[in-house]
Image (cartoon, one colour):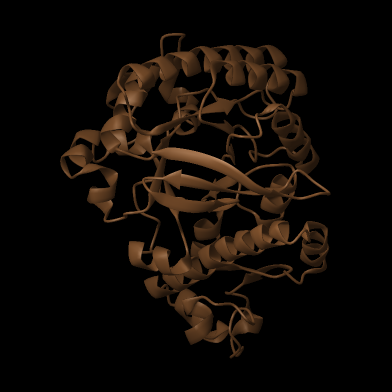
Amino acid sequence: MFNFFVHETDSGSKARTGSLSIRGREIETPIFMPVGTYAAVKTVSPGELKEIGAEIILSNAYHLFLRPGEKIIKKSGGIHGFTGWDRGFLTDSGGFQIFSLPSFRKVSREGIAFSSHIDGSKHFLTPEDVIGIEKNIGADIVMPLDICTEIPAAYEAAKEAVDITLEWAGRSKNEWERDCFPAVLFGIVQGNKYKDLREYCTKKIVDISFPGYAIGGLSVGEEKKTMYDIIDVVTDLLPDCKPRYLMGVGAPGDILEAVIRGVDMFDSVLPTRNARNGTVFIPGGRLILTNSKNREDTKPIQENCGCYTYRNFSIAYLRHLFKTREILGYRLASIHNLYYIIDFVARLRNAIKHSSVEAFRNEFYKGSV
C-alpha cells in the first residue's frame, strides 16, 4: 500500500525529490498538504483542490472524533467516501489541539483525560484509542498521540514530554501492528528547542522503526534560526530511505529552508487562514487585498499565475468582495493561496531535479519566485 523512493538529490544541500506510493497513486515529493481540519478545506471544494493540484489533505482525528464521530465516517465508507475526496488523506492525532487547551485536560502515562471544547463532555483517550479512531476514519497516513510542549518550556518538562511521546509511540505501533491496520503510521520527533532532546528522541523513534517520520513542535513562535537548526539536527539522524514530514509549516520561506535541510512533506492552515483575512501570497511577500490603494487596481493578483482567481478577477474586485464580506472573496483568495504554495513546491521540486536549488533560493529572496 505504501512505498517511498528518493530520486534526485541536490549536490549543495540535503534537498531531495522522491515519490510516495499511496493506494496505487504516485505522489511526488516535496509535497504540501492543504489542511481540512474537519474533513473539509475551508471554502474550497474537492474538485477545486484537484484543479489546484492537491494530492493529500490533512484532517484532525481529535475534531472528527468529537464531531461527527468516527463511527459515522466509517459507516459512510471511511473519510474518502464521507468527503468525496479520492486522493490521499493524512490524519493528525489531535494531540496538539488537546494540549492547546491546558485547562481542559490532564495527562498521565496511560493517556489524556480532557473535556470537549464543544459541549464540555468528558473523555479519556489512550494512544491505542487514537489508533482505533484513525482506523475508523480510514486515512492513508496516520500520526500517533504525542505531547507537544510550547516553546520555550523548561528542560525537565520537555524531557518528560519526550519520554511519554516515545512510550506512546511504541504502544501506538504495537496497536497498529496488532490490528493489521492498513494505513501508514509515522513516528513523531519532539524535544522542544533543546538539540540534545531532539537527538535523543530522533534516535529512539528510529529504533522503534516507522515507515515515515514527522518533526513536531516547531513553528510555534520560536526564532527562525532555532527552527532551522533543529530541522538540521533531526534530518541528519533520520534514515534517508524514509519520508520526513515537518508538521504545521506552510510559509514559503520556511518550506524552502526545510526542503534544503532534507524535509519532504508539509502542511499548514496558513494559506487558507491568510486568505480569509484578505492576505494573499505573491512573489516577494504578501498582498493585503483590503488596503485602500487597491480600490482601483484592475490588475490580477500576480502576473503569470495559473490559478482560477488570477485568470478571471482583478485586485479591485477581490477587495470589493472582502469589503462587502462576500463569501466568494474568501474562496477566491483561498484558491490562489493554495495554488501558489502547491506551485511553489512544484517549482522547488523541479529546481532539485535540475540542480538549481541555490539559484531558486536566490531568486526567492530577491522576490522573483
